[in-house]
Length: 212
Image (cartoon, rainbow, N blue to C red; front, top):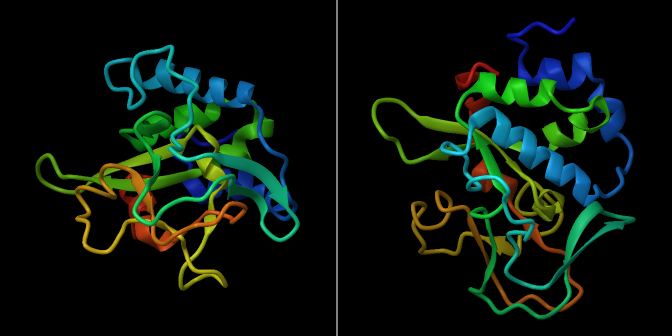
């Protein structure tokens, strides 16, 4: 039995043993999993509060450049450019396939509704995002990118490789982070792995603030 107020780390590591899952390279997910995510999400939040529009939503990914999702010996699941990308070019937008839950309880209901074999993948790709405040307090949501962007690996100071996509210097957070946009930070060659800095969208205390 899993308590209805279980926290994110408890769900992930105590009840579903995702540590064992994450210790090995996981296969790429097929489109049926993504369709299931979107359908369960729509059923929980309803079409009016959906961040991906009324169901059925498009299956088109948020990438605005040619890409390939594959498993790399060094990176595991990862995203690679299949054409050159200019510095400043829009690479990805959250506007088509990023599902966001308005409360922690909605997210729990989502996780409880999934087949057990995809719970760990679902939680691995979930994160807390901060949106512009609409009143008092922080406007936080749990989000899950239901396209292949969950395979984008970490770059930046906490990684051996610098990020090559993200929010360009000089662009406001309102225009970039809040809008769920990632741009090329430099010219990117065909065949390069796309990397973003996870610290750019880390929200300290975000899970706890949502009761998770």
